[in-house]
Image 1 (cartoon, rainbow, N blue to C red):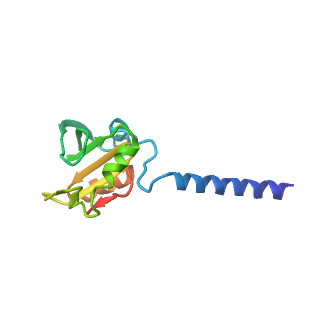
Image 2: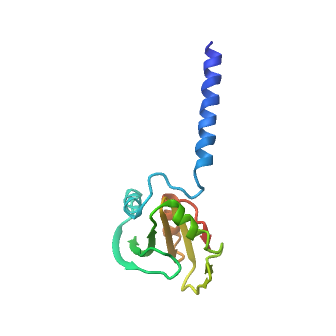
Image 3: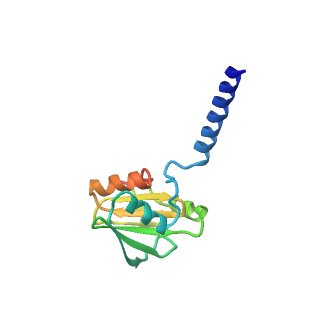
Length: 144
């Protein structure tokens, strides 16, 4: 009976893990759904975060927020729901050089992240910022 219980537990555990894995995206960060929870997660990771001005990018529908993270600016675009975010994220070329029909010339390397209802854009090459974003959000989905 004990062996059966252990086997049943392992089967249920594995099934649950597979279900969780299939339901999540590779860039989904637990608990980070909106710009406020992103800010909190960055602060919990030890970053200094300040809220800056709003930002508008022609290729993204919502108005964004600029967060200054350890001195570097990141742009955060919050969508009404994950489906709307995914729809616009799908328009970003793998290298970040174009978004939909817009060709973009960046001042530095672009890095696009997504989680919850957010697209996060960091334009820069500071490895500490990139590592922080990778740890808090997950691997970038587009960029250089």
